[in-house]
Image 1 (cartoon, helix red, strand yellow):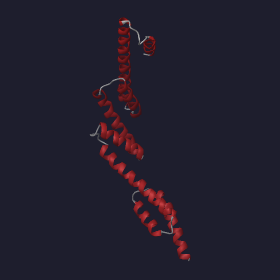
Image 2 (image 1 turned 45 degrees about the vertical axis):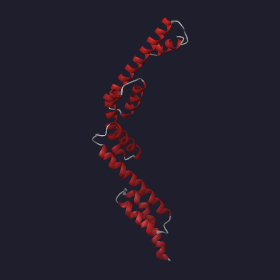
Image 3 (image 1 turned 135 degrees about the vertical axis):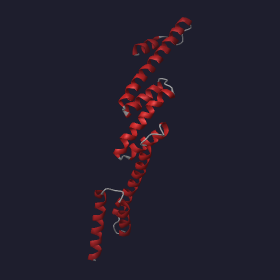
Image 4 (image 1 turned 90 degrees about the vertical axis):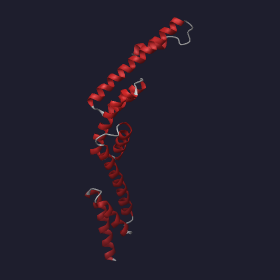
Length: 179
């Protein structure tokens, strides 16, 4: 492919010779066909391996090489399924958001999509809870807000995430009792 591309580049595009233009057109078509064939082989290998990252790269290359939407549908469904499968245990809001968006676009019937949507919603709630807890910890003098934040976060967050706020509340409560 590289040799063909280099030879094609050497052929003058401004030539008035019809034979030379015909050769250039045939070489361009052969190069495009070879690139598409190569991209499709790479895509098939990535799909068989169920490698979400490799599929993303292969899909983009195949699309750039001229693959049809029908040819890309299967690999896109596999990528959606694999992205969801990898994102669910990660609890990464970024990974979940990508996987959900990709699946909604290319494979809305994906088996794990409802579960991933729910997990994404929980991760957003957890992030908001962490922010609220952190803000409340910064101002322990407003112990009512700190207590409310701890209660709100108790079921959403892990115990180790809530313990520092409880410690701040205890320390602040001891100060109040001392006065």
